[in-house]
Image 1 (cartoon, rainbow, N blue to C red):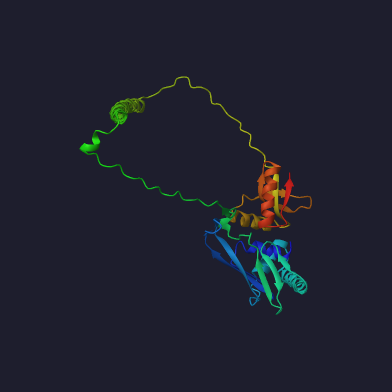
Image 2: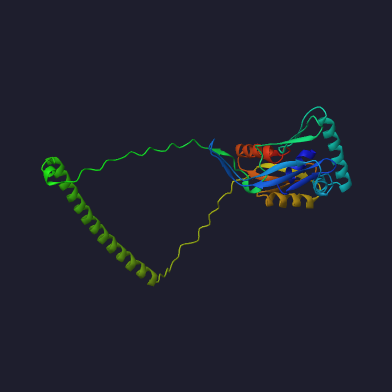
Length: 298
């Protein structure tokens, strides 16, 4: 793994990751928001900034690299210094991409400018959530309804005959509906009383089975999950267990899937029944978590 990948991993767990003698990546949690112009919903996320004045080695990055690579703290510090030297050399002519964190470049004053990756979200609680856009909803215009004139002796005679018959039919239907509702309510009450009586009889009954049927054992075969997304392979067993606990803390259905041909213990983000499911999950993990993840069919 490169230095950028280790920084990428730590930003999911910590609010600040300092690269000694280079600068620090600082996160700030922001809540969900809605863009009323584009009708887009954005989930909560960690907003990332870069501070070139944070260069003191706090040990976080070096310790994580030492644990992951199974090397000493001094060797991890040397590894960081070598990568930083390559970054500084590359920044003189082009842009440096830090995994899915963002990109670094120099302005005219030779100061480092950081451009965060807008598609990345390092907030664990928002894992799997994406921005959602919805079409605008047009409001239905209200239509004014004019009230009918009051009935007087003069205009009462002008009401058409079919309107009178319609009104009479409506009254008849209403009465019939009320009567039917009364019948239904009465029937429902009778059924409820019958159900209550049956339930009391069942509760007070005692069943004695003289010749019980033999017990039936059902063997249900569990689907094998033979496709694993590997997060890393470790020579020391405790390092593999630490990685397993770290992934489970992040919410993954992680597991140890045995040792490879070199005797290294392999830890998987998750395991799947079909290759298609595993490939889809691998694409998401490689884009948002670790570019070094790979698929193992076992």
